[in-house]
Amino acid sequence: MDSPDHADTRGIPMVHPPDPARLAADRAWLREVSERPWLTRQLAYLRRGGPGYLQSALTLGGGTASACILSGAAFSYELLWVAPLGMILGGIVFMAIAHQTLSTGMRPFEAMRVHAGPVVAWGWAIGTVVASIVWHFAQYSLASTVLVDLAEVAGFAVPRWLMGVLVLAWAVPTALSFGSGKKFASAFDTLMRWMVWLIVAMFGVVAFRLGFGEHASEIASGFVPHIPLDRGDVRADDVIVAGLATAVGINMTFLYPYTLLARGWGREHREYAKADVVYGMVLPYILVTALMVIVAGATLSAGFTGKTIGPVDAAKSLGSLLGPVWGRVFFDLGLLGMLLTTITLHMVCSGLACSEMFNLKIGSRAYRIATLLPTPGVLGSVYWSSMFLWVAVPTSIIAGAMLPLAYYGFMKLQWSRAYLGKDRPRGGLAFAWLGTMGVGTLILAWFLAMTVAKSVPAYWSRVAALFAGGAE
Image (cartoon, rainbow, N blue to C red; front, side, top):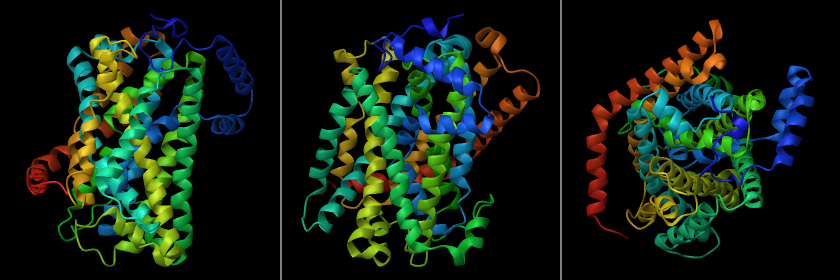
């Protein structure tokens, strides 16, 4: 079995290889922290941060924003339970991924191919590329709409296509530079960490201004799982599936284990990595999504007019809270931060998955082309004069339909003695861990199957009608 310290780092972004001095300092810090009480250790992990923030930056995007705003607008606080459930189930899978990767040091695509089967491995990698491309269109449409609204606040009138090109001009060099060196990698990590908490802060300011004392019982009851009645042209099960599917994307499951290997992490980092999943990914996601649903529920639910609601409507509705300017600016900036980080990381995921499938060298021409595969998503800012939130819902459903396959693969790896050897979980912990992963996979697969069968054809007929209407 491969040792993590001598894992094959060919083609892993940010590896040149890991700095031995930095790794030694990391290990010395871990040894010192390991002697502290549990709570003190957790506080140390929280302060230090890690690759969990990269996953937050990837998942907090247009799909999440759309599902949350539509959820709050259509159902008020009733579906507050959806996003936390999806992320908690995903977090358990990510802890398993961390345990597997750091115990063996084996490249994840190869581990999946050998121990879960070629069909699962290739389906996982292809699904990563497809999801990154499919989700890209909604990201650009929402990002360009938000930038147009910010320009309008500043007194300028700009076309959406120009704002889409501006986002593209930022995203392409950022994504292509992802594996360019240690200094950039450190700066990129810091940027993602600050962006995640900036997003939390932006929506937190808006939520604080709302004041929720009189609605505390309604908000609390919204965290109890139940399925409300459909409202108008919005189906509750569609919004539930979109919320579950956007919590953890299949491309996140591909990127995450490689970021662990890229840092040179090994067995001694396992507790730290699992804690980082909670503090860097699960908690920020739950905070942001809850705040967005609550804000949308408080400001948009009473006058909800159906699927034609857009993100600018949500931003404008906050004028009475923070003033006609700052309400929109804070909401737009929080949403824009989500979109920019996600657009960049979709491209990174596409390039990484292709490099694994076809043995491409990081930085080569073929790798760069693979990284650019999602860029046609910029057309989302050219077509559709008004990109409504409902468009991102079926997009998330289709991309999310591939996630159960990835979960199934990691379940097989978690149970594989040939793969994990003495590190395979045993006893009650093993059954609890696998059982939770299995229940999460079944829940997601069932909701997706039911919704895809009922809704996707109708949704995409409407998308086709929008395309038939032409560009702006």
